[in-house]
Image 1 (cartoon, rainbow, N blue to C red):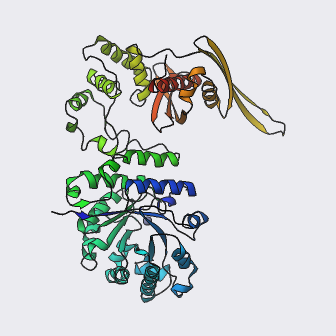
Image 2 (cartoon, protein in one colour):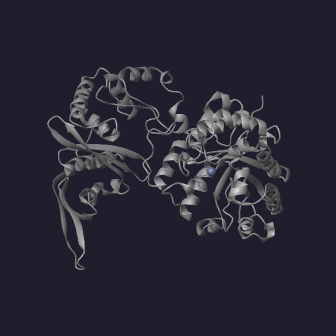
Image 3 (tube, rainbow, N blue to C red):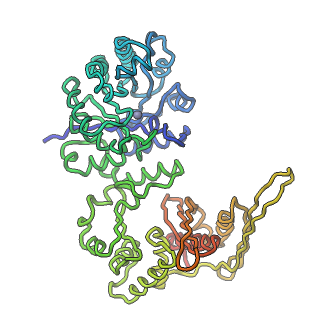
Length: 531
Ligand SMILES: [Zn+2]
């Protein structure tokens, strides 16, 4: 049986740009659009030309994407003609392959927000679609508040959708703008719509206000819709939009959809999905959600010993899909309750070959337990675990020694009489027979120490040049009689690979120092730096 084509429409750069705290530059938008293009997304909505300078510039020239690059804007305002509306004119002038127009489809909004008549709203839809078609663009109409509108006055909501379709809009997109509609309602309403407009011209645009935007999108597909709109990582205002990063693997890997539909994402592209999701977080300077379905660091992480031994025998026993399919990886957590099988699985994953009856495994397990009892968290710090394992198996060279460090924090008045806090660190390092002293100022003691430590490692400097610290998390733990500080540091290298290291001490600088050292040594090991 031939599979039907299902289209994906990404609005990260338009609706996703409404997210609190997100502000895309032109460079961000171009980089994200090209990432989406590479992935194989059919439509990429770039923004709202005319509404702000960035989007106007983005659509100021042909960007040459393979995807259908789409500009967003409003239908003509009530009481104006299509040719006499500056907003619509800017949209028609934009260099885009498609135009996505938005119009009201809820009678209440037409009356209260637009203060116009239903007939005038329908005329605005017809004339705006016609004007965009006349410019040779593919046209989509977003029916704003469609589901609430349908519940209030089905005839009018359907008339708005039908008006666009009859004028030749390629897609009529049903929007759950307030995000409160539930999957069964979405499914039954879309079933009614596709009796009037063929499903291969109907799209769904769901918001996540009841945590069901993904379920709502899939419900619409079950009912006959053939375009899904969403964003990377579910970005979007309030609770976000439908998360394409969850929808894509569901469509590709779950038989209900995979057997019925083709999407523009190849198997090879699917393997890049975890990377795409993390790359967006990186650009937004956010720590990726560890618990994100399919792509999160914990999505295929297992803790209990009994599960770990079963996973080693057959991964399918505890995994709903294979993590490699979306570019993620299996992770067996090493923790206080870890059994020997956990440690073995983790060693295998990090590529350390060791016989399963090697007595050193038992010793490693003892060390892990002892250290976790005083506050180390190896399940969160994979790189520190790997180093500990390599050290226990006597496989880490002694690259360098820090013979002394000194961190000084001073608060004083500067020459302008302003109160300032100045931090400086000095580190003495011994590499082979060379002694080096480095000093650095930082915006805090840990930052200064980090900068001084990485400033000059002699012959090892070239291996750590691309290393940077991307996240720093501190917790105070009450272990035994005294409070200790646990520091987790996330680092990244020039290839975008990330790892986490841990340090524990009653002194926060000492804990940070341990985690920083582990990170640097881990990078040297990973880069194959000679001893
Ligand atoms: Zn929206």
